[in-house]
Length: 110
Image (cartoon, rainbow, N blue to C red; front, side, top):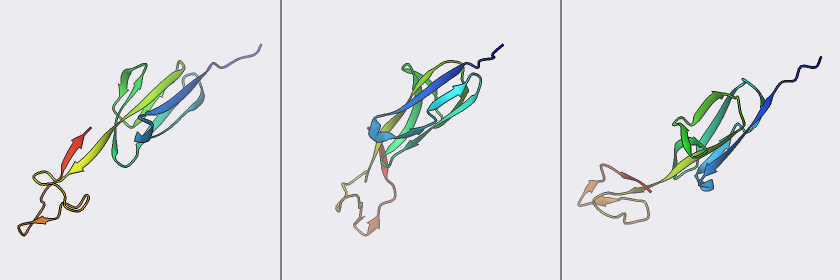
């Protein structure tokens, strides 16, 4: 008598696509511990993993025992840096104002 093992697939995508990369896609035997990993590109931060639009993990490295096909989306948020109390004079260079150098940078989530 043949003994067949049920297999399931994992597919990952990044949203937005420019936000980063994902890994862990493949076909796995039922019950296998699967880890998917999201890596943010410069200018983005990892937000969470979702499945069918529902958050499933806030960790970039998400592990689970597979028991069904999974389509997972790694969500990224863009990040920009501004100089706070005055605009940068030379691109991203906050520079020196009145002899004092900048003491902080404000992070803005877009």
